[in-house]
Length: 298
Image 1 (cartoon, rainbow, N blue to C red):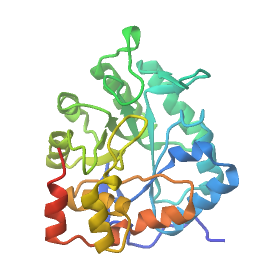
Image 2 (tube, one colour):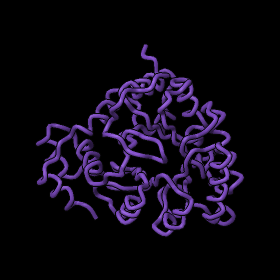
Image 3 (cartoon, rainbow, N blue to C red):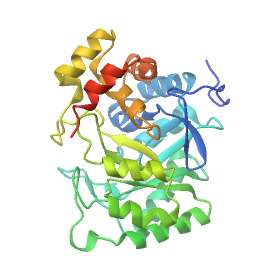
Image 4 (cartoon, rainbow, N blue to C red):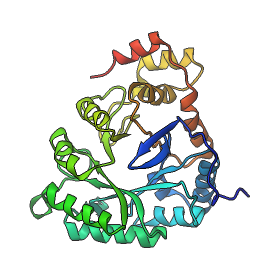
């Protein structure tokens, strides 16, 4: 068995990118789908990801009530020295038809970080993203659950100064909120973004100008949130056929070419699909392809 505790040699899927002072590969892994995987499946997939050079894994304590964190710890602890685990705070798991509820208050953010530390077996979470609940997709904060961003940032800065987190990110935010958070030295922004839905293009550009990593979620759309799937677009499908690859790979490869500050975190429960996702970096798009794809966005 490969010793996953050792640092991986130089060379990362998609090439290197700076994230809050850490060097990551531009193609990482989003662990949310492991909420529906057993321990053996999760262990095989996570160890294979690390073997292939993945050193950026996205998780959250509210994925299965820390179940996913447990998968990560069982598979990879003690962690490779260069593994960057990124978590999210701002919601918590509940037993209800909608299994999440807001947890936006500063004391709740601290409690979630402490839960991450315990369940991941870490002394410091390298990066913690604050998931704001002001706008779709997902649950929304109402009434007393609406908390000023400055209050939340103050708590995260305190956690950073205490050494409990390494860097601060934002998730599901608008332009004004990113600008408001710039003095806090944010490391990354996670927003909905894809080849077809570029409504956050201005936020992407702002992040690029400030050396902030851009981590798109739903880059292949989402049926649940009615976001269009680039993989179903006829232009994308034609280019995929010409390049002998999949429409999904073309859609993800376009993001890597379009935004040099972008880091992808595609998720899967399949080792074969994981390997396909990591091969996205090898998809070659010609100038004509890029022009045709660029014309699709809105």
